[in-house]
Image (cartoon, rainbow, N blue to C red; front, side, top):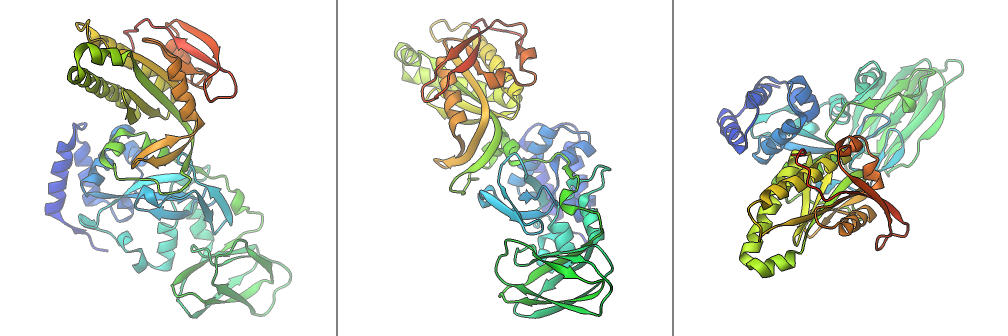
Length: 484
């Protein structure tokens, strides 16, 4: 379709984006060029990692770029659930609140538990206010384009780097809309292989083996009605197959029919995914938490997170500090300390989840980033304390890595579960200027290198609410000035 670009709005929002924060040279102009020159495909579900790689830019900065651009109305955020077996976009949403605990691929007839760090992908599509593209109106697309381009992702690739949807497109023989309340007649000539048919809406699924001698035209009736939980199986002879698809619903549906050659196991295709922005990475990005505070998880049980490192801090003897210098002075110091801890957290690729009294809870994807942040926090607060002998802030830090549940608590995105409890208990063991690490954090990649010049002591501890004893590692109270 012809480009429809709102020049005034684009200029206005790019100016706002340029002023949102300090950006690397030419990054805004690269984004503007992409908006102006890119075709519809290039402006639909932009993978920020792919964008960053193609423009020699920092992934972290590009994520921030698209988040700020989305907050300003240049882009829309897309949340998608990928099928790891066939690269289908099983479901997509405009907001995190659309995610739920389970999803099912109607083409593979396989169900999955949702995990934010698995196949929950976040991408960005140009806003229709800025530039109109065909994908803003998927209902107007042909059935073929709607399924191939909207119903799949190009992030799944075969070992030779070919996008798996290109292979799917070659296998596809029929992709047709099925009008509501009507019977649609579809014809297919086939000589060998397996006929795989399914509807993206989950209301039809068939798997027919082609075997035996050729036969005259064969009729197969398909009911498009209730959600199906398994393939309808059977055999057909080589030749013409006539499918009569009866849509018993009040909505238009889609039927996709592919022919898989003999010896090809589509379900076992060696698919990998190029790096993409997953939900867990986004939740540990401070910019997302700052700009999209209204985003919440509506799933009643929360959404699983398979791996997160949590850091807790607290101030030792803060009550005495309030008594000594008064509430207003102490509150001001504590707020300054929060600002410093957030700056260190963001610099080390983490995000502040919440403050609890005088304490913070922060989350990181990589344990090494969390440990580097803890060391920098200790050094930074030591520098802050210089010249304030009667106003010293004494930091205690604890870290633990594990699984968690992402939830919404008090209208804030938060984490819940035993990993959270243990991280908090590990912090409670620490004394003044000490950093305590759980075994999981201490043994993680890159952590030993960070600690090799420091004094480390280990101990076995029984933490409140934890059944088994845990080995903890204490980074001694000496202040390290090399980790800033």
